[in-house]
Image (cartoon, rainbow, N blue to C red; front, side, top):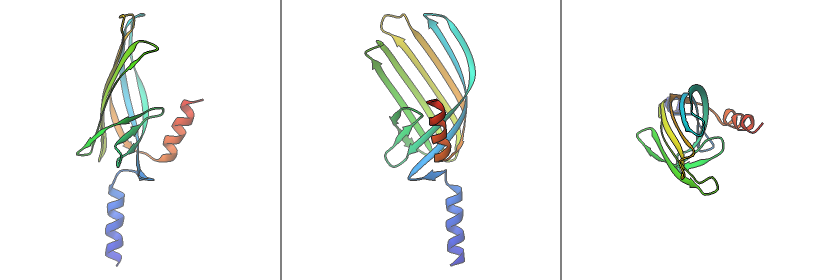
Length: 145
Protein backbone atom coordinates (compact mmCIF):
# COMPACT_ATOMS: atom_id res chain seq x y z
CA UNK A 1 0.00 0.00 0.00
CA UNK A 2 2.83 2.42 0.79
CA UNK A 3 4.42 1.74 -2.60
CA UNK A 4 1.16 2.65 -4.40
CA UNK A 5 0.94 5.95 -2.50
CA UNK A 6 4.59 6.71 -3.29
CA UNK A 7 4.12 6.03 -7.03
CA UNK A 8 1.00 8.20 -7.06
CA UNK A 9 2.84 11.05 -5.36
CA UNK A 10 5.72 10.80 -7.84
CA UNK A 11 3.37 10.89 -10.83
CA UNK A 12 1.52 13.91 -9.49
CA UNK A 13 4.71 15.81 -8.70
CA UNK A 14 6.14 15.18 -12.18
CA UNK A 15 3.16 16.61 -14.07
CA UNK A 16 2.65 20.29 -14.90
CA UNK A 17 0.79 22.52 -12.42
CA UNK A 18 -2.78 21.29 -12.77
CA UNK A 19 -5.65 22.64 -10.67
CA UNK A 20 -9.38 22.58 -11.27
CA UNK A 21 -8.70 20.73 -14.57
CA UNK A 22 -6.57 23.65 -15.75
CA UNK A 23 -2.87 24.11 -16.32
CA UNK A 24 -1.34 27.44 -15.29
CA UNK A 25 1.82 28.88 -16.84
CA UNK A 26 3.95 31.94 -16.23
CA UNK A 27 6.13 32.91 -19.19
CA UNK A 28 9.06 35.32 -18.94
CA UNK A 29 9.53 36.74 -22.42
CA UNK A 30 11.32 39.40 -24.37
CA UNK A 31 9.28 41.21 -27.00
CA UNK A 32 10.87 42.90 -30.00
CA UNK A 33 8.43 45.22 -31.75
CA UNK A 34 8.43 47.40 -34.82
CA UNK A 35 5.79 49.93 -35.82
CA UNK A 36 6.34 51.37 -39.28
CA UNK A 37 3.25 53.59 -39.45
CA UNK A 38 1.93 56.05 -38.44
CA UNK A 39 4.89 56.83 -36.15
CA UNK A 40 7.96 54.66 -36.80
CA UNK A 41 9.09 53.09 -33.56
CA UNK A 42 10.97 49.96 -32.59
CA UNK A 43 12.32 48.47 -29.43
CA UNK A 44 12.34 45.58 -27.05
CA UNK A 45 11.20 44.99 -23.51
CA UNK A 46 10.72 42.24 -20.98
CA UNK A 47 7.18 40.96 -20.59
CA UNK A 48 5.66 38.42 -18.20
CA UNK A 49 2.65 36.53 -19.56
CA UNK A 50 0.25 34.34 -17.59
CA UNK A 51 -1.89 31.60 -19.11
CA UNK A 52 -4.65 29.29 -18.04
CA UNK A 53 -4.87 26.19 -20.25
CA UNK A 54 -7.92 23.95 -20.45
CA UNK A 55 -6.20 20.83 -21.81
CA UNK A 56 -9.47 18.89 -22.12
CA UNK A 57 -11.26 21.50 -24.25
CA UNK A 58 -8.06 22.86 -25.84
CA UNK A 59 -8.59 26.48 -24.77
CA UNK A 60 -5.71 28.87 -23.97
CA UNK A 61 -6.66 31.97 -21.97
CA UNK A 62 -4.37 34.91 -21.35
CA UNK A 63 -5.32 37.85 -19.16
CA UNK A 64 -8.20 39.00 -21.35
CA UNK A 65 -8.83 36.64 -24.28
CA UNK A 66 -9.37 32.93 -24.97
CA UNK A 67 -8.15 30.99 -27.99
CA UNK A 68 -8.85 27.54 -29.38
CA UNK A 69 -5.54 25.74 -29.67
CA UNK A 70 -3.96 22.59 -31.03
CA UNK A 71 -2.04 20.50 -28.49
CA UNK A 72 0.57 17.93 -29.54
CA UNK A 73 3.49 16.27 -27.78
CA UNK A 74 3.53 18.66 -24.82
CA UNK A 75 3.30 21.80 -26.98
CA UNK A 76 0.42 24.25 -27.32
CA UNK A 77 0.03 25.75 -30.81
CA UNK A 78 -2.06 28.90 -30.98
CA UNK A 79 -2.97 30.62 -34.26
CA UNK A 80 -5.38 33.53 -34.32
CA UNK A 81 -6.31 35.88 -37.13
CA UNK A 82 -9.14 38.35 -37.10
CA UNK A 83 -10.38 41.54 -38.64
CA UNK A 84 -11.49 44.41 -36.40
CA UNK A 85 -14.24 46.13 -38.40
CA UNK A 86 -14.33 49.18 -36.14
CA UNK A 87 -10.60 49.87 -36.49
CA UNK A 88 -10.37 48.32 -39.99
CA UNK A 89 -7.29 46.38 -38.87
CA UNK A 90 -6.28 42.78 -39.58
CA UNK A 91 -4.54 41.17 -36.62
CA UNK A 92 -2.71 37.86 -36.51
CA UNK A 93 -0.82 35.99 -33.82
CA UNK A 94 0.93 32.63 -33.61
CA UNK A 95 2.57 31.02 -30.61
CA UNK A 96 4.17 27.77 -29.50
CA UNK A 97 4.29 27.08 -25.78
CA UNK A 98 6.00 24.00 -24.34
CA UNK A 99 4.07 22.87 -21.26
CA UNK A 100 5.08 19.26 -20.65
CA UNK A 101 7.64 20.00 -19.42
CA UNK A 102 7.18 23.78 -19.25
CA UNK A 103 9.87 25.56 -21.21
CA UNK A 104 10.24 27.18 -24.62
CA UNK A 105 7.94 30.02 -25.67
CA UNK A 106 7.97 31.65 -29.13
CA UNK A 107 5.36 33.89 -30.68
CA UNK A 108 4.85 36.45 -33.40
CA UNK A 109 2.10 38.91 -34.12
CA UNK A 110 1.14 41.67 -36.49
CA UNK A 111 -1.54 44.25 -37.08
CA UNK A 112 -2.12 46.10 -40.35
CA UNK A 113 -4.80 48.57 -41.29
CA UNK A 114 -6.67 48.19 -44.57
CA UNK A 115 -5.50 51.59 -45.80
CA UNK A 116 -1.87 51.04 -44.76
CA UNK A 117 -1.91 53.85 -42.19
CA UNK A 118 -0.98 51.46 -39.37
CA UNK A 119 1.47 48.57 -39.34
CA UNK A 120 2.91 46.77 -36.32
CA UNK A 121 4.91 43.55 -35.89
CA UNK A 122 6.22 41.78 -32.80
CA UNK A 123 8.40 38.76 -32.06
CA UNK A 124 8.49 37.16 -28.61
CA UNK A 125 10.84 34.56 -27.12
CA UNK A 126 11.10 33.25 -23.62
CA UNK A 127 10.67 30.46 -21.10
CA UNK A 128 7.59 29.24 -19.28
CA UNK A 129 7.30 27.63 -15.88
CA UNK A 130 4.47 25.99 -13.99
CA UNK A 131 2.31 28.46 -12.09
CA UNK A 132 -0.96 28.31 -10.15
CA UNK A 133 -4.49 29.69 -10.20
CA UNK A 134 -3.90 32.36 -7.55
CA UNK A 135 -0.87 33.78 -9.41
CA UNK A 136 -2.89 33.84 -12.66
CA UNK A 137 -5.81 35.60 -10.95
CA UNK A 138 -3.48 38.13 -9.28
CA UNK A 139 -2.03 38.97 -12.72
CA UNK A 140 -5.57 39.54 -14.03
CA UNK A 141 -6.31 41.92 -11.16
CA UNK A 142 -3.04 43.81 -11.74
CA UNK A 143 -3.83 44.17 -15.45
CA UNK A 144 -7.20 45.79 -14.76
CA UNK A 145 -5.94 48.32 -12.17
